[in-house]
Length: 541
Image (cartoon, rainbow, N blue to C red; front, side, top):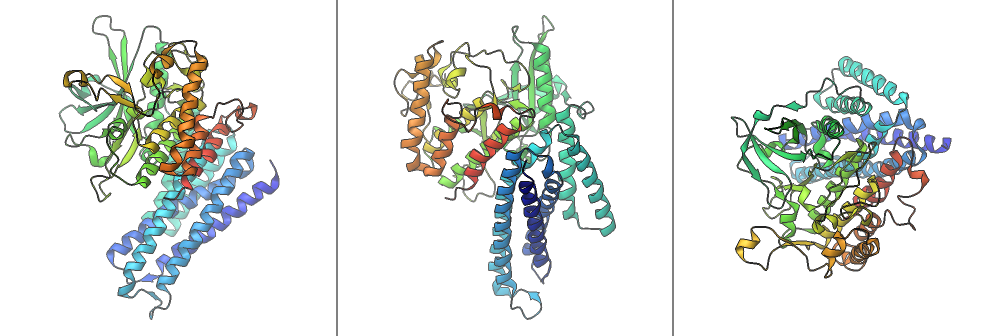
């Protein structure tokens, strides 16, 4: 890797740390702020504490990163420099000219709150792109990563004690502790002590509730009103049960994280192993997920993305873009922890209303679930499929039908994400459920193609061997993305969708080629961040 690139990353990191410190100093110098403003200032400090810790670590390890990984970090740091400069200018324009140092006149508090809110929003948006890029570092096999994590953690602990810093500094400590935990789990040397096995009788299975148009069910904890989301993997006879169990336990450990929500995923409580009553053979494995803290009781039910898509859109385009970003972050993290999802579609995505959205019509926050087909990326794939056209629609042509043509790789998830992003961008469900049938049949939820899809699509998607026909369906989706999507979401969003849908095309270099087959599996993740996450983050509506 060119030495100039490493030096550029280090210099950019130093500038970000300098500007971030300047921003927090300006905030701390504000005198006589009201309680509401003080709490916002503390939030800015907490956000920056985490960011500064991560940027400092990046500076330490920049020299051992892959060239593309280093380059994308440089681009993202340069964006942060601009955001910090703007935030400093805004806050200084409000506090300057006060009669008592940085004391703010009462009539300026509205502007002050607005400036702080802007800083919080800008930092959080930037962090949502930086986090996936930074966490990719933890995939590297280089021992230097472990040494620097340990070294920086020790230094930060000593600094916190010696300076008796405020509680906001704990954000930096927790960021490193979280990174070390994930690093150990990824390496397979830190998860043995983690408790993820749950008793079958710990949940009231008889009270399980289905979420309409979803693969996930909601189950109450025994003797409590607390509710969990559950995805169940059937242990079919043709499966390698030991491998399935190993995968389920491995995924549970990697998703058992308090901060997982920032990636559009729910924290995994553990795994329930259920045996057949007659044979005592393992019949199923259920992954149990904790709902967001505001939705633990039985009174609130999340809604599947499919349910939303079947209704007329009643919220802003910016909310649709937010969901697209959440789904992209979820896919990125699943890949970062060495798994492929294999089942990304609106039925595997749950949406929770945001309490602070200000309107009941707002879409809310989306979380990727449907972990009933996932696989560790390092393990063999069975190439098994099914004949359900409504599931094959979201699979790449090489993965459709009863017998898939190719082994499953990360790019197949990228394709599935592209179909979902196309669908939510058009806000027109590709799958309808018996809307023209009588009530009795409608309750059976018989799927029929939506109006955007061509006639005869069902049979093409289900036939084995007809790869040409399947490619025509993919071409039809690409055509929709190029011709119709720009009218709904703009040309930049449409370009991201086309990138996802064509990621495995022979004439594209973005996700194909030998350079994507690096030892640590980082380059596909870097390319996904560059071509999908960053480009979605640049869209302003």
